[in-house]
Every structure is written in C-alpha cells, then in structure tokens.
Image 1 (cartoon, helix red, strand yellow):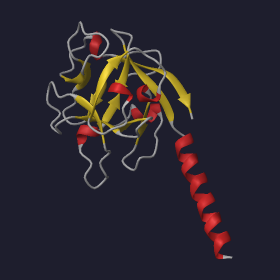
Image 2: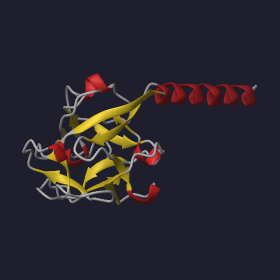
Image 3: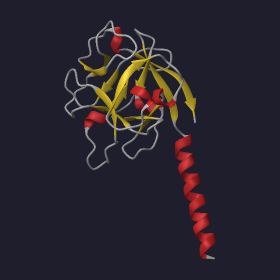
Image 4: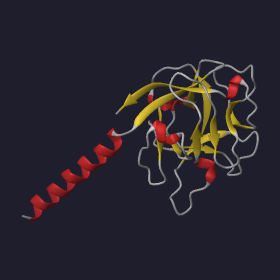
Length: 180
C-alpha cells in the first residue's frame, strides 16, 4: 500500500511539473539592427556564461521564457506589465546584469536565479517589444536597456546594459514563439 501511495505522489508531482513547464511561451529575442539572436555563449548551461549576439540557429541556448519570482512561467502579454525573470530554456538560469548594480556598460550573463527572499532587480526585465514589433527590453536595476556592445558589432558581440537612447542596437523583436 505504501508503495502505491509513493508511486501516486511521484506521478502527481511529475504531472504538476510538466503542466507548469508546458504553460511557458518560449521565444527568441532577435536584435532589430543585426538580425541576430540573444545567445548563451558557447552553447553553455553554466552560470556566469556571457550572453552574446549570434546567428539564429534554433538551439535552446537562444530560447528564453519569462518567469515570476517563484520560477513559474508568465505570458508575454503579462511580461509587458511588470518586471520578471528571463530564463534560458537550455540552462533554466536567469538573464542577469553582471555586478548587481545595473550600471551602464554592465555585461549580461546567465546566472542562478535568486530566491524570492533575496531577489534583486539585476535579474528582472520588462518587455517593451512584442511579436512583429521591435522594442526595448528593460532591466529592473536602473531601467537600462539590453544593448549590443558597439553599434557595428557582429556575431559574438557582447550584450550589455546601456542608457536607453532609441538606437536600433537596443531594439529587440520577440520571434519564433512556441507554446510548450
């Protein structure tokens, strides 16, 4: 009898987890100026990995989703209303402003998502872009924009925070949306 109860709990837990993951809208963020995607460098799932601009290849290191402070996915429409984590599909790590300050020129990395009790704004983002229209992705620390380092940069260019100035290297389009 105990074995059946344990099996039922395990099955229920797995079903509940798969329902949460399946509710995510995963997407790529394509830079409006370069036509390249936000990418975890080197197809890495390790914390502290740099985020770069790279040719869109469809791999999971270029797929992202928005999540609340408890890690539960939120819709793209909800992500335009407030600040949320952006999580990488491959690693489940959070997009993070390296250094916790949100300063101009801070590099962007993927890092362990901070628990609600510690959650700092360097891992929170607001979407001002929507499918088919380019817009800013704002960081919660100081309302700075996700920016490609150097306006003439190509594949492998560093992604950083920068003062929102309205340049195309700060505009991103939500593309390749999948409802998992």
